Length: 278
Image (cartoon, rainbow, N blue to C red; front, side, top):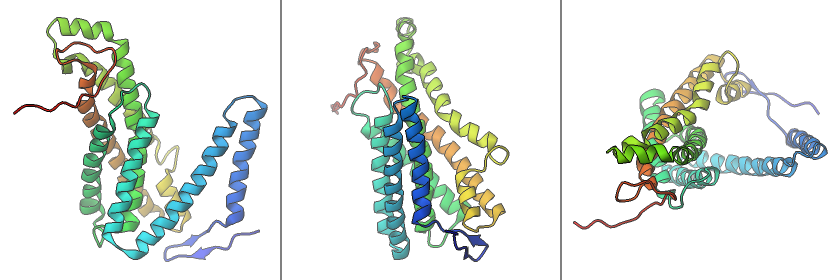
């Protein structure tokens, strides 16, 4: 069945009907079947993830549609808060080998960096009216959070893995009088660099090798290609800055978990919650 094109103010868009969604899901089923034939062991996970993504994306589409139509800033705030809470859970579930109790630091780093970047992009770059424009703020938050969550998970995993690998080096540095920060600094730098690799790769290849998702989506929806390119660059630049800030902030907050109060290396990192006497 042929799709019916829809005219927009700047071009032609091509809406996807239920058959298009079913065909896309069928492609995943074929890939899952191939995985089963080759005994890869990822077929069920792939199919389940695709079904889950379809449901979640459609649900978010309905929710965003309602929020955009309502134009209520409180609904925008509630939706973003829910996204932040979910981002913390996803970050901790993806990070491997991290101690329990990091939900607070992860949430704090996301809130601080997200508020900073969203404020700068909306108020200094795009300048929408009203300032909380749901059709801009909500998708922008989702794109920034998605990339930051991956970077934080990779960075946290790499940090604790590196500290274990460098245990003898860390003990030696501490014995020679180094501070906890100085002993942990090589692992911190390594984790931040690793978390930034996907972002720097995207920046380098955008426009030559790949047409990123936001730009491609706007063009497919009938938007002006040049304006879509400008939006995409703003997003990539924001992601790069946000990733670096969030990774640095979380490292500053968690590196102490690898040390005891007496500045000794701790085999099992622990998040301490102590009340200080004033």
